[in-house]
Image 1: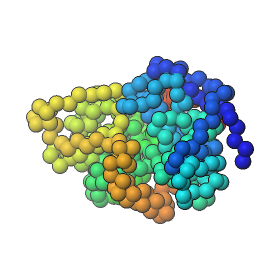
Image 2 (image 1 turned 180 degrees about the horizontal axis):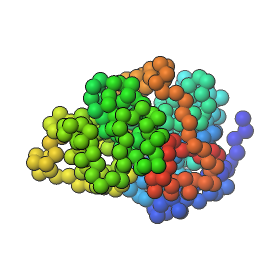
Image 3 (image 1 turned 135 degrees about the vertical axis):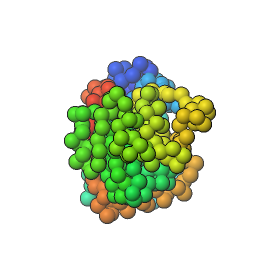
Image 4 (image 1 turned 135 degrees about the horizontal axis):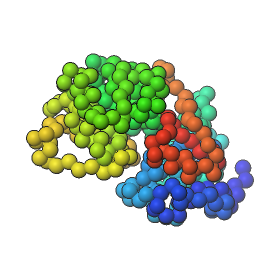
Length: 332
């Protein structure tokens, strides 16, 4: 395959958010280094990380100008030195935390490039290395979900939230999900036992009422801001766990006084990229379990809502405003 020298891409030009994401036609096509592969991107996943990076709030994120997008899928067209086990023509999905996916070509680490499951389109594999592992890690090795337990899942209509609802129900949990009222039917269709208004006056009171005052055994917290305090108050004292993996609503402070006298719960931080690097054995087991869920039909091909590359700024702005549902994709 002939590889051009330049490509179409979305370039983030400032840290003022998605509005300064610009479509360019002359971005240099990257070259794979040792241990890397060059992928002709057929679909790129849109994640809240992309919004955070555009605002400069993602720790150690890229500095503008940079090609945006962390998640991409497509066809391998070139191999870097030392790459084995992958060949040109193979279709993979992967993540580049420093960006590059909102483009016609991107570079991925060969070790982190996951084959697109047989029978799936590239687009359907989006979420396989970001949303789904995050949801499963929060539920299983970190959250200890089990049959009969109650799980509170925030942002349940989003890509990670939808996967978490399906998985939690599979493992026998009672699911309390939060979403805006216009998304409640979507979440109920996934199997959630209860759906409450994410913008309600007192989420903690709603959860406590549904659990007879006990609180949720596990809370999946991806919102942050004022919602973090509600999550802590809604979780069972002493044995309850809150897994924090996002801060879409902004940062929130919690003190040691809070943990001793107000919220006696177990708080666990999750960043899937750090988990991959710091606990590769755990991540390997996680992915094995994830593919088992796919094989048994618990999880099937994704159904992202797709947009053209030029619509990227609008799509990210809508994601930031929390007006989207499910997985989102950009097609180069």
